[in-house]
Length: 517
Image 1 (cartoon, rainbow, N blue to C red):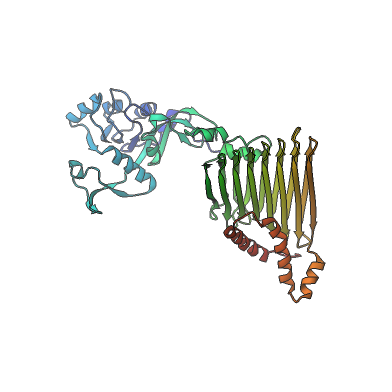
Image 2: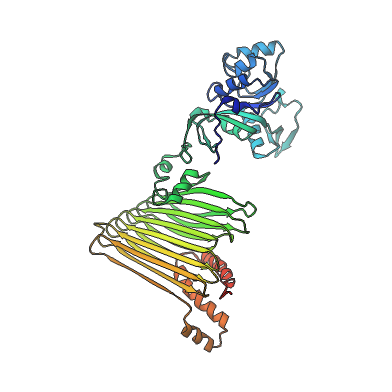
């Protein structure tokens, strides 16, 4: 289990050596890691080069480190400001070197180091004494100085919150040099005001994120969704106010065996907003990887979301997505999910029709030659007048297995609800398998609900009809399979996405195996 929290100050300071370049966070006394500086004093490292915004205040923190003679050189922007008594004493006595760097340049030099940029040009300090000895170049009619990146051996910083995976957040004025220093050093040591559980970092997120993140696809009934929330290392949060298009592309790196990824996606569509969402999951190679994604969709009144999702990863990939959607009055969610490859893929979908007039259409296509593709849905008709349609179609060859589970819940009082679900599967080999489990839970009168399931092989009569017209057997089978799947695809994607999806499906169909020994 990853845990980067250390138990003692001595452990934290153990790797700091004499002569180290130390980046000290803070803006004056704001955000300065005084506890860590005290720990460095106790540890004993000397002959240090310190990078800081200022040269110390009073006789505490950095000033105390200077007073003890442990600093050989300081790189800063403001060596003389309020109460820098210790630095002035040392400098007048010739006991310390100083390099003055303009504040913006100082921050950018460290940011460049963190980004792997060796140097950059800036107009700051051109024509001043600070330009002495530096390369100067005219670019587009303006003079610039070349500044080199500034990296540290160690950074001592202050954070507001931290978790055991070393994720940090900063608060208010302390969000100054601390974040940029954190990525500019070989070793970063942070003191935090609060230690929080994984996934609980605030991060100064806007209110609309705080109000919605983690409310769906993270509950007791969705344990892997809860894990994606607790263990997430990043994610995407988007608010849509008008009409927009968005492509989310998730790539599993093939040369990283055993890679595990936990992330979250939050989409909030404001009243009347329109979003066309393309979501792709790609991966190659035979390495076993795990992608665990939690997705939350919030549709305000009258919003419309058209969602096309393609999951096509490597032969040993494990893929889990937990998706929760909440639809308010007259909102509409139209989704097409396509599963084309993984050792195991699982899509859990929970749609709540939370207000009258809301509508959801869920279509799924799966083309498998091996592995398992499992789609489990819960359609929750929580209020009167909601409508839902679900159509799932699978084509399974070789030793593949398709699983479709759909539960429709019509809650008490949700009159005039209208729901239908249909599962169909084509089996192209004797070892192929398809499982379907439709469920209805109805607690209201005056509703229309139905479900159906059909699993079998290609219709021999239809195949004979096509072959009797001179169409070769392979082409005839392809026509029937295409017609079978197109029923679930048509009308749920624009022309370019529709055609691109079919190219992927056709390539997958060409690789399907029939009976195997």
